[in-house]
Length: 298
Image (tube, rainbow, N blue to C red; front, side, top):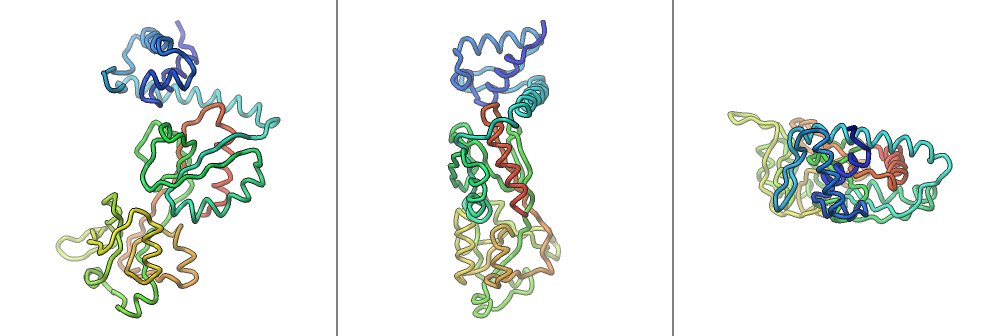
């Protein structure tokens, strides 16, 4: 017997939602119906796709391989349907977008007036979280993530990348002097992140016996938001390492000064939009992503 697209959809939704119960709710089906569809699919393939425990579902090796193919098939079907309806229907409905507050403030919010003018029937809801959010739990349609992606179950669209630089205000440098080496930097007041810890490794080349491409700093003050770090640097509190997407204008207008360029490693943070694509959301998601790629220059 051949596998049906309904069974593929059930399988992918169970994995996306993390449980049969949550998948049944999303698909507006009974729990028993979803469970039977999953069992039927495994019987047709004569292999176990998921390991079931009392707490969670875990993909088998065969399940991971089959999920990639199933998503490709479902995506192709959605794209085909969307291409037919796109010409006669304008995207509408709610679109919830989440991003860390610096990216939201500097790269998303300034363009939303233009987006709404193009797509007046889309109701935007913008949220800011400094940590990675669960899209299903938070009911987020698109999340902007900075750095390497971890969750392979999500669709992703690359928006660009942003270089990291070590920066200080002219006032701070006038008062404390400009460090000319990594060793000199250690005697200055450094501004760092509360978490995650890897953000306190700056892309600076160190010399000597333990030479490295990064420097682990000991911050004198920490904050959870990059925007807070930026404001501290602007106020002359100390030295910070921040991405161009939030500081390019500050550097251009000389509110912040790049330092230690002679030992700076060219490290760029990838910026991606991640999402669970469904037929009902495809148009809204696609038009937002196309708009952001065209507008945001990273």
